[in-house]
Length: 312
Image 1 (cartoon, rainbow, N blue to C red):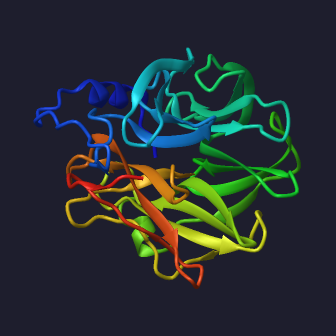
Image 2 (image 1 turned 180 degrees about the vertical axis):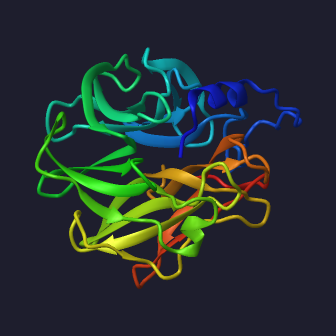
């Protein structure tokens, strides 16, 4: 979950007193991948051999980072700014089966009246032009296109406990029909610090829809990642009984709100944030780690912090 603009601005600019890391080696990576406290909720896409990373940061807009290896990142500044502030949790969709443009699904507005909208650009670096609001009282949008080209917008309703809905789309700018509730917080791990199910991300694998999400409060160390499966993008979804697949442990605190992207060698990588410490706050940093499926189709993830790992 992102955070109120005021809090974000304070944490993102807070001094990081830890020693500066040594440069990342070509054959390894070490989390955090970007030495900055504050960025969270990362979404990553790949286009023409370059990875583009969009995180929550200062609440004023979205910076965009680029990399060719998921390890070494360069910041290109703002690709989108919004005078409404409270800008959180970006999701960028490249319309490869249509106009070739980039669609940014954003969260914006004051804490108690968040909205999900969409903006469009000819370039992944922006600037993105706002095309309007899609959902009121909502955060954490994620656009998924099925194999038959049908479009679905997953988002989190904040009108009560955080719950995940799916909204069919007529096109990339227009909703169609009514949204459907697909995930609610019911399990103990989802309710360790508030009733929270958020940060949806969809993976389609061998005919099964894997809806990944985060649970518990994002400001606590028990924030974690799980998933549910279905035979349709609108469900019904069955939660994996081994959830969460990414959680606190071995020095890792509050792993959550992620995206998944194919690495340079074809493996899957989870890009997510971790908490800096075990206090209730929004001091977070960006990380990557492997994600994979076993022979039975069960999803697995590994989380690391501060130790060199084989690079993607």
